[in-house]
Image 1 (cartoon, rainbow, N blue to C red):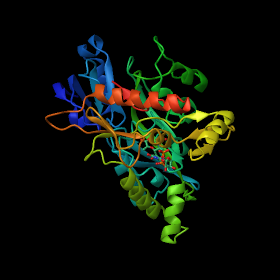
Image 2: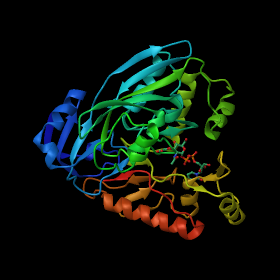
Image 3: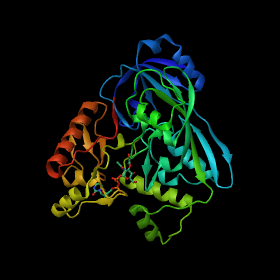
Image 4: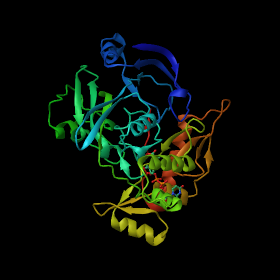
Length: 361
Ligand code: EPU
């Protein structure tokens, strides 16, 4: 276990916001978690778990102890006639993991190529892109209870996966937890800050089915005259599409989509279509509609705008970006001010409250 004091977090959050952690603890194994739990510092301060820092906005120096998860490792756990079960350490880069599984001949994660962040953070917000979500390929995960050090395994039914949501995003109940409880009981407890995910396993079916139903991918297939791409081609297309419309965090600081796509009733959707026929909407299985938040923000005139040193990306209004520099850094406060101004505009025009996706720290 490595402990660093007064550590800068600029390079550890993809928005590139300047802030410091009083203490940063690098967790490289399950033993490091145990060592941390018996460290006196553990009892004196709360902790914050950090993966790739791709879904947070730092609003100031971090008072909590930052636990930077760097548990590595990739392996095939098992295989049968139907599927491969593969496992990655929580600290592995998500994109490198997707690329590696493909190179081993285990397709299935290609639609989620190039999503920033780590494997351990992926279940927390149930990452998803181009028609596939983590929950569609999830097998199970190993985690440790940050109060007791107990190790346990959770399957999908424990994790409460939803659209950009899971049990790991919800505040945890105080008091002891019993990992032997039913999945419903674990789901209702909320596990945010309570557990540290150490390893994640994926079940990749041997009968691979391409999913190019997402509009951007089906358009690409038509443009390339290839309606039956293999997994590597889908991977390449997803990378190309993402690079063309989403900023590379290494070049322009950002936290991916800043708002969730809102869900509205059929009546609300019809009402908005009557006023704005161009609104991008998708019907859901329950008859409700999901609207493209990027379109709503764009329609309010925000695309390409800047407020302070925070801005709205020119090619995708759902992404807020860092427009600061070394002399004039972008602060978390400026990002929140911009996000709130956008929420107000969208509410005033469409009557919809956009929900922020990243976690404010
Ligand atoms: N649109 C506009 N103007 C904009 C942005 C979007 O009109 O400024 C329209 C697009 O033309 C399109 C629609 O809105 O018709 C949807 O846009 P897009 O296909 O880019 O997808 P999205 O709904 O904005 C979601 C995810 C992304 C994911 C893509 C592809 C959320 C919050 N975002 O974006 O995820 O990559 O679909 O699957 O669900 C992330 O979570 O960080 C992320 C990037």
